[in-house]
Image (cartoon, rainbow over all chains, first blue to last red; front, side, top):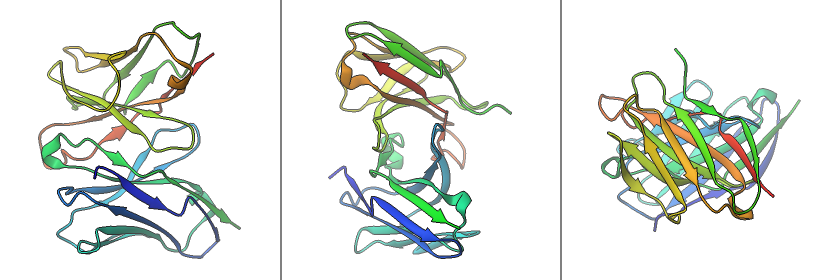
Length: 113
Length: 115
């Protein structure tokens, strides 16, 4: 019940295209869902996050869509650029649980020029 | 403003040895968490320190221990190293108060190789 399942494992997108990464969770007590971006040799960096009381959040080219009834959320990267090539992790946490992050397995995104 | 810093960057140890990793949190942060990231996987929560006490622990054996100092910096100690302990060890910090308390900032990690 503590797992977060992420798909696909890897993704290849052409420059200018839309990248879509999906995550699903079981624990309905989770109340904060961040996405992290990680470049090789670096630590994860927070990209965007959402709470379950909203269905969508947009920041620049990055959008989170959240479906509370399906217990699913997804990251959309619009106008994907080669510089977006990185590994993306979804995560979930319990605010009342000291914010321990439960991560998905990651999606390796390659944006080809 | 320096972000989360970790040392050393890389470390090579032999099975059975002990290792200490260090972390300095982002300025203004009082809570430090440690994560283990095996190659090709997502980070796994080890434990969290707040007010110099271990507040929460993940599914890791007692060989993994930690400490938080009065200046909020933290150490991760691993005893009796196993080959399976080879991973990137990440430190994350946040402030336990304020509107942004859920946001965690990660350091660059320490790459530990056990031979």
